[in-house]
Image (cartoon, rainbow, N blue to C red):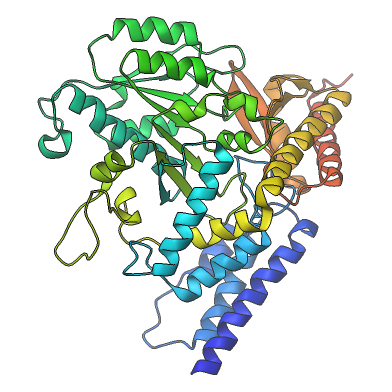
Length: 468
């Protein structure tokens, strides 16, 4: 049985490695027959058992036609990083070890890895060394945790114990956030019972950063109310960062909780070339970011930080007689900082990624992504594209010809398979959105992709031109 398990897991690792070795040479997005794909996974559940090696073989055969090259060097959609070699290997080990990372009793190793990786992350991101770190699924969970702790604090300041008494009869808490906030803030408001009507939108600048003067005016009208201010490091369209030092200072002056959504942009702090974009970030009360974006850690992996560690644990923890080591307090466990008790050991992969790169490697990853984004902008602009944002990080917005053709151009690029880009609506226009986050992307990948985008645009515009 042991030999069979070793062979099974080794085979699975080899299949994954082959995928990684060949992902750059295959179309980025597959074009499977949906009916065939559903049939390969579907059918009646067998009555009897299936040998594990047969299950693995069937899974690989069913899945491979529908796998997207998100881990490859030319996937520029959403904000998706790749997966570094050591982080991938660590994640394979995490699955093999199958540790529950709730506390030290369940896995001393997982807990130690999280504490070390969390300390390194705080160092790189310029956050207080005393801040707490919860290993969550991603920025949605991280933002929800930050807003939950903020809800606790601002309602407590108003004389209301939300953890005990809930929201019925509570003073109405207000979330003040940019009109350019990420949609995870709205969902967090819904999940936390505050509702989207609690959000007071603030005007944004031309590049999508919060208008700090407008923020000040709104905060002045909310004097005496429980307020959470949500700021942003890295606008999802433009990469623009809020003026965090000024905005956080305003929030503190008005007694508000200051949370920073830094899903990818928070990593700007790791490079001397971009750290100025997040100047003052350390003054906030809570922060959220992803490791599976710019740090290139396998999905799913996010980090929720809070300046007040005890308040973080008091908000998120729970106690039960059978849970050795649970419960809030100065000796809180790592499971007290997240919404889940049954947690996979995400810290192993984060630890491995940071250990592989070191401070200089993380800075270089940030710098190279930004430089490659600028290269893409330059190549496309030389081919006739209009660039619609200041390229300050790794996000690019462009259009080619009539913006009415944008979606057709995007579809043509995706069919071509050289690269994958998505679309967005920015300032009322449909635009092509390019996000460069993968550590394996090279200048050649950028050049090949720019040429593919320009070819697709030329084809679409030629087809749309009136015949003479």
